[in-house]
Amino acid sequence: MAAFSLPSWLSRHIGPNRGQAWCRTALASETSLQASVETIVHQLRGAGPADLALVFAAASYASDLPRLLPLLQEKLRASHWIGCLGGGVVGTDATGTPHELEKKPALSVTLLRLPGAQLQPFAIDTETLPDLDGPAEPWRALLNAAETTGGSPSPSMLLLVDPSCSRINDLISGLDYACPEAVKLGGIAGQHSAGHGSLLFGNQVARGAVGCLIGGSWQLDPVVAQGCRPIGPVFDIEQAQRNVVLEVSQGQDRRSPVAALQAILTDLSPQERVLVKHSLFLGVGRSNFNLDSAEPSKPGAFLVRNLIGVDPRNGAVAVAERMRVGQQVQFQLRDAEASRQELRQLLAQQQAQTPNPLATLLFACLGRGEGLYGAADGDVNLCREAFQQVPIAGVFCNGEIGPVAGSTYLHGYTASLAFLVPRGEG
Image 1 (cartoon, rainbow, N blue to C red):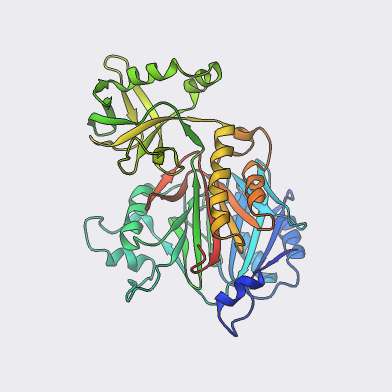
Image 2 (cartoon, rainbow, N blue to C red):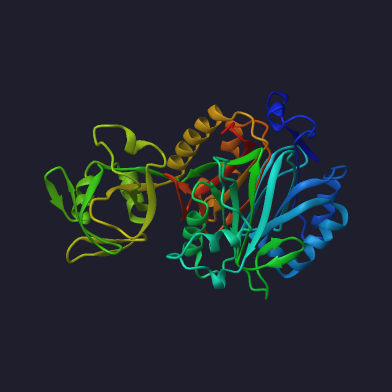
């Protein structure tokens, strides 16, 4: 069993007579679900009652998924159980080493003891969501959450969504509406052909969305790595219709987006020009920048979105995001080295703020992992460079949830990380 306790210098923040915080992790990769559960239970032997259990299972166990939580709960104790299936599993093994297990049977279980935490699990029927134009109270009611008053801190939110949900963006917007100050992190669970959902909640399999509000003495600190680097200048949008950008400008120079990109290509290396053919994206500014400053180069300055079409007649581009005149945009390239550099920079910033998190959750795109880095454990190894002892668990998702510039978005090709830290340390 990999055992991780809160460092003594942090324990004073939890309050007197509340006990010690701890994290216990286990990882198994047996062919059968039963065998993996037995391995997990063996690794977690001796663990006391936990406040929260997080369970992530590979999609290869989908047909047996209804058996998973009852099997674990026969041997392990926790007040709340949440998890999901994924296209791959992230976990920390018995030696304390984190791994990303893709395209193979795998089961990851993390038990958390969080003295002073206020935990509110929730399950949402996404077929009957409230009106986004109505009051916020019906959205808060979905979470069993009262509005924070008197300056009390908003809780963090762990959010997992079933892939059958047809209103994911509405759900995320509504939860931002209900709890605008709460950090929201998670992802869309893995797909499968069995006749049930992909989510785990309590002792059952669920559809819709599940999650947990985490408040009191604990919070989730977000790190959202979009895996891209900018190329060329920042442009202003001069003409746009819905998700189509028709004209951009740089100073007094106005041109179509395709003409702007063609000018950028002349300064790129041969390798970069190859990447443009299959790894080109558009960064959409979350606010307007002073173009003489370095702010646009900072990770998180842009929301990275897919380019989904080009009109050769007028040089317009279609983007997977609604666009508006006056927004600033910048073309982006995605490759392994850009992803490494961005994540290293973000993790270094996080490490400077909170050097000793109790645990880290990783929600990674199916397009990352070995397919991006060319080798296993790319993101977890980078995380361990900055945090040498932190246990890491999570799942490969069909879409990642995390904040950019204060609002929550559904991402692709992203690593969305949640660092569990004492309140006030983030």
